[in-house]
Image (cartoon, rainbow over all chains, first blue to last red; front, top):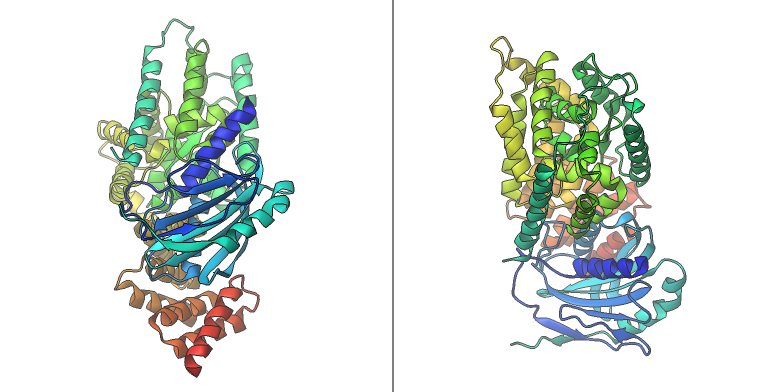
Length: 184
Length: 401
């Protein structure tokens, strides 16, 4: 039962981390993306981002998201701008993470520039605990293309699952392609 | 309704229900004397204290305490000025600072008071600090937690409601988990209205008796309300809640200060007070900068510069605030602050890199290169050296082309 509650909380946290909130722009991102989902992983229905897991999101998940650059975040009032350098975009993500009261003992292990399939972006690696004390590790890639901020992240329970499933994330990264978003 | 408003609405409804629960509980239980000779004589109180200590240990082990012994000593000196003679011997009031830009202060029943760096940074003088501390001290000395818990001891639904509300409210899961129910009630929902009013009234008397002007707190509450309105902040804590600050201000307005109190005395002590706060002002400005609260971050740094006018890190932080805010007029202001920081301490690497970034973004690669290189010379193992090397590579390519 406790595990079920933790699982539900985790889904909420994932949602909070990924979704945008009021006060932001309602305009959808101009660019979409496509990725290959690794064999044995399943998609969890969501219309705001792609979330896939092999076992369950409490053990590991890969999240891919495109969001309009000017949209607000949940904790920091800073917003990305199209003119930002990857390092400046990374700083906003870090500020958002550090300001998030749900992430306990957040430790930033790495923040460096990274080329993501031809796009100049950043890579951050961090660990944290949830309110129940479970430890997680996240590898987060992000870059801005015109008015769209793309991010691909892999979160797994720190230790066993992170090492075991990181290759699946690399597979998703390699398959990542930008496509023009469908207009409705 | 937009998401933020609807969540705020739900939170306020939750609070309202709790207050209704508080108001509806019967008064048939035995009265607790306001101030006991020995608080620990009561078994219920012993249990409450043990629970508080457990919650505090968890809370403090999460690295949330701002460790500054001098500052703590000063805060405890203010407490000593305020404390009435009738305090039970086993109740020791202590104050610690929490690293949080949100506006709050709260007390555990065992006398431990926590004040957020965000609330300290908004204060202008010792009288304002005294008003907040006195309010929290009344909660401890007049046993508000015990009174509240005895009221609800036969209402487990009340505590479940508190926990559920905390778990559903933005950003509170960590806090709720860390400070436990005892702390959460004090920190977030506050006590029942009559207990909060009592804390205002008695706190007012203690502040007066200690020689402060209690009305100074009105300026603090006004400032907090204005900041909350301007930033559109959604703050989760008691002192960051618009209705609660408003209630504190209303209660204070209704209490009168004797004519002999010298209102200007508190103002005179402002510089001395800010000097005591010292680096917590800069620390909190960095937290506000992370939250994108540029205005309050700048105000804190300016306060700090009022007491330490030649602090290179303060000028660098002002530069960061302007650069990150990114308005058209901000770029020149940021450059000026960075240059001033360099003049004060030429060996401080961070402003070199920041100036490099500004030139780099303007396409002034030769200038940018000069500052990036000086940054790396001063700090070869800088954690952002991978970014700086990337910029330098681009600058070189640009020169070649």
